Amino acid sequence: DAKTTQPPSMDCAEGRAANLPCNHSTISGNEYVYWYRQIHSQGPQYIIHGLKNNETNEMASLIITEDRKSSTLILPHATLRDTAVYYCIVRGPTGANNLFFGTGTRLTVIP
Amino acid sequence: DSGVTQTPKHLITATGQRVTLRCSPRSGDLSVYWYQQSLDQGLQFLIQYYNGEERAKGNILERFSAQQFPDLHSELNLSSLELGDSALYFCASSDRGREETQYFGPGTRLLVL
Image (cartoon, rainbow over all chains, first blue to last red; front, side, top):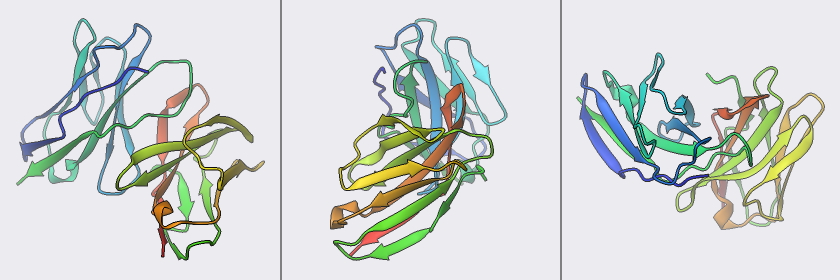
């Protein structure tokens, strides 16, 4: 599975969009990009995933660049409850099924 | 609420002791995963079971073992506990064919004194 690089921390004003970047320059053609988040010692929570097209669900949007070497998770209207560590994970459809959580990005939403 | 339950929520024990952590997956999920989260190591995969059989192993110590029962609940056994085993232990489950989308339980916080 490809490695990912995320900034260690980010701040975002409440009500504004939070844009969390992830670099995955070694991603291969059949690997998906997954985003999870962990709110203060709770169990990680699945947010969204995608292969190459942009994806949107009730929680967030995922924008993947055309070359697939990077992606951005967008929380359109961040709330205080979105303060969490966000993990970008890249993995393929085969191989081990476990998720590799790196260090993630600690997002702090500021009132 | 992810639908995954874990007991107990907190556990305090002494070095050298043995404990058992329990996990009930979401209804219908056949896969169960165990992860350990300590302050210095982050979230680390320990082991996966699928429908009662061991499917994958990660950085699981020999002092640790797990099993999945016919009703699909799983137990993680930690023995000869050391101070460094103090951590949050998470269980996750996933649906067949969608194993990258894992649903995590609330975790068990283990403190070894």
